[in-house]
Length: 480
Figure (cartoon, helix red, strand yellow):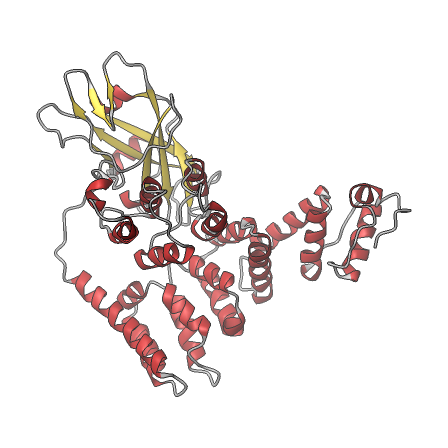
């Protein structure tokens, strides 16, 4: 307990009385109390967690700030292979996420590691797995999968190295990684490594019958999908933003009974991203009640990338989770939202609905990679990057003429003096049309607008040439 006679600790005791410090280690409590007297604090890897916890518990903002700066510096100075430092930031970030449901430190690590030279990042991941593969938490494994998303071969190579040691076995963490790595990509870029890995797995003496069936199934499914994809004829490029004007969701679901709707949505080819999946679930709230496990299984099967957190907050306010939000909300926010590769951009001017539908126009969204995200390989000296969307107006003669496409011609971006990142493809752009009158979230599953004698009909509303109603144009963009 902390003595109430201490003038330094009087602020703490005023709120907590005799404060029980049994949740903290004595050595770090003494360090913390001394810092309150001196006004300065020394932090190292061994004291960071306890000091950070006490700073948060007792709301000592300057201690919390010092801990934040210490952690950020540890991540930002990781520009060479440093196993101890890498282990520290991984453990502390995942500890905060697991215990406090706070992904802030995870976001810092993921964002900063994206700017590290790939060979350094891959080396750190390899050394970390070599030393700690069987003891890593699920949260750490998830972070490693995310960090290696552009070169997941490094995970397969590390798994093979582990399997070739005397301790090599079909460990739960090996299963977890193989279940989440893009095996088709690995087969495409390094088939020798891929086949060597599965040969080694099948030769393990400790495999059970169920383990062997699982390995064979994983290998067969991956190979079959890869061969099927390779033999498909190439289609002409389609730069249309996939989430808009794809038809009514009722056409997908039809008259199916409530118990079948979730599976229909989960398997629909019209739903191409996690953004669209959440919107589809929202459209049938009250009729379907998927569990966390069911949602996770679909996302894993479809290999959808996370959404930007602010999108999910808007979905929350739309009452999607009104009947079971307290069971699912935190899990989905922590596992399927990501700020490191996602961000929201808004076109700076409001647009009249009628003009948006009836004018051929380009809409440019500009962002600074230094202010929002760090993108490896960016060629822009001033960090000025962006995307341009081309609207083809609705036509009286051709109801299907209206479209919104991602502009890919380099000349357009040169004229705008912004850098285009080719990795931002149409499927990584989710567009939302938001009414400034109602501030409502626009659902993707609406038919294309069409002209009538009174104006343009869209989503049950008619916008005439005299109408002053406006919209906000939002673009949720994934960089990787």
